[in-house]
Length: 86
Length: 370
Image 1 (cartoon, helix red, strand yellow):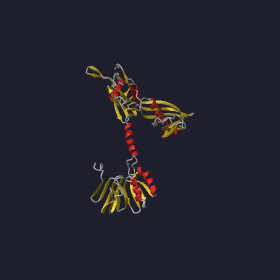
Image 2: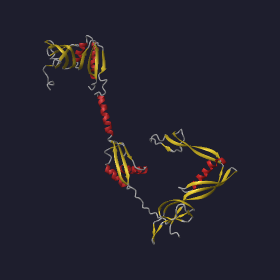
Image 3: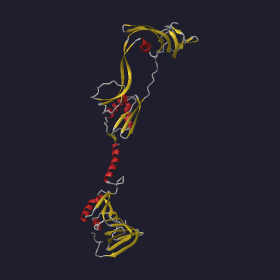
Image 4: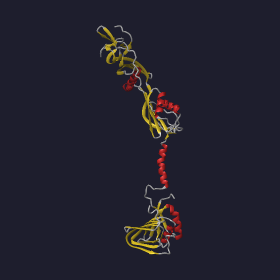
């Protein structure tokens, strides 16, 4: 129920192994060990020994990370993903 | 909307892969298990989005391969599979609501036919029919028993779309034997008594005694002190006697011998219509007018000429059979002696003596003068 009415950004990191974001986002880039996307005015990059995208849906991104090394967030106001997605 | 069959798409690694995935995301195509490898990128989605994905792919000029993800799955949760499954369950259920056959299994075909006719006339039912049309068991039983007084019960069994009526005949009334018992059994022929087979009465002669024609063999009246008690006389008394026969037969004989039995398939139009057969296989009604499978008895005709060498092998057995047929059943010929034979002019004639063992008792009513 919490997620159904989730209107504000939510970023969920579970045991440093899975990362789930709910809400409008923009996928940027991914490879075997990293994934980057823009979510609610932030440019987020996840890096680990291996990064897998479990699901890439309209308003949900679910990653599983093995051996998380970096979770980098940087404000990028010009992107404005939260307002409208491409 | 309904095509949820999972597919795996593999794309060759290219600089346009990321914009392609971004475009898919923008078009609200959900992707699952996105794996980036050195040479390729693979992800899972459903068949429903394939046209959209193809359209986007052509814009980015990527090489793409599509595979079904559920190839190894036996049961797929697809619309057609579910519809098929529903049909598989529904068809027998619906068919079970209909009665396809009403069978009658009685002890005799005549009873089956009579009961079938009654059932048809009483209920006016045509198969196939719905189960609701069929009257209750009690009503069927009552109507059938009303019409057939000789039945004690009708078992009604239902197996799916088949109803079996099994009439039970009431036990037959054993007829009281009102047959009048004879007073005495007397000898019809003279002979030596060999054995008795008596149900009622008292023996008046013993085994190995000679009985002459007209003698009382068994008496139906037993003397008890001064009273005579009537018990009746019934049974058989066997005696040996000699029977002399003269014969005259042509020396040329035509004989028919039985050969083996053989099965044959007869097709209408090719083989002749009427064939004498020993037994016939029951075939389904639709096939019966065209094909029949019958077992035939083959016979072989042969010409035999009688001569002196064949007296024991052919002439005696022939006479034996002929005489035996002319005598009542249960009669035995114990011995035969050829008295004289005369050959000539294509015929053989002579006399033969048979030792016959036969029932010589004959029942008589009223008192025999003693």
